[in-house]
Length: 304
Image (cartoon, rainbow, N blue to C red; front, top):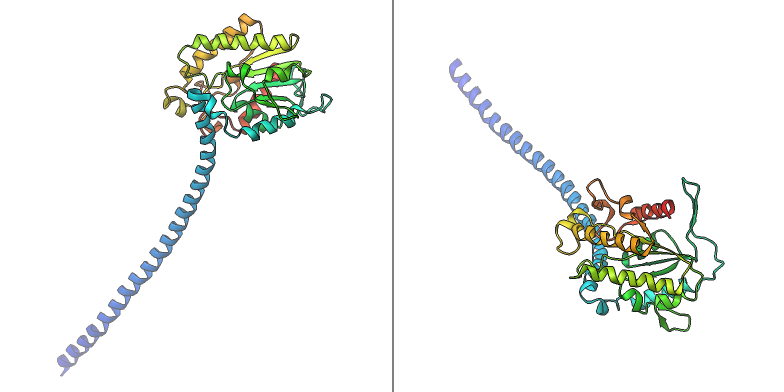
């Protein structure tokens, strides 16, 4: 009797233990699955947010890329691409170039050498899309803005980029002749990096300076160094690279010396220890962002 009772009891315990074990195993599996699903949902949300942020960044990058594409195309065919946003650009120039000569200064600064620099309507800037960004980011509303997408040392003399109050278009030299301009800052050369004959660049740069002196014989002329590219851009482009920039900057220095104008080494204030434009300074490797445009302006204040 005792043995029979024990066997039956053990059988009942075994029978009740198996379902309990199954419940625990299944429960553990379900619980683990819930945790996994929860973690997966969190992870998917994180990925979704990351993708959305990446799309936003790429959208901004594409805007800059469009400017860069215009710049590159202008090297090959400047005339066809200069029609991009022409009305908008020239209307801006009408507003800027019809400011009265007694306008208040937009930017005044006392530099460390106690030299006060004013960027008012007596100051002119000649340049391409990089100079456009420089003027915009620094809020230089009163300066004479002769910047234009794709502008080069030859087209700066001939292209009618200034829209007058009566709707006509004239060259920057024709406009300068009628203004009280005391100083001119020039930065040109990035669009010309693809030119087959660099010496032609030098000759055209000299011609531009000569033409400016004809209409404004007493104005101070500053030629600025070409700003290098980022390393990523330079390493992956046969034209827009820092080897070409160095070669053309040497020509700009020669122009400054031979024409007795002031050379401003703007690049020295912007590049890293390896002579490249820092990656964070540009979204396309060529055009300079707001922070570095401000560094550019500070350099001019301290060295003009």
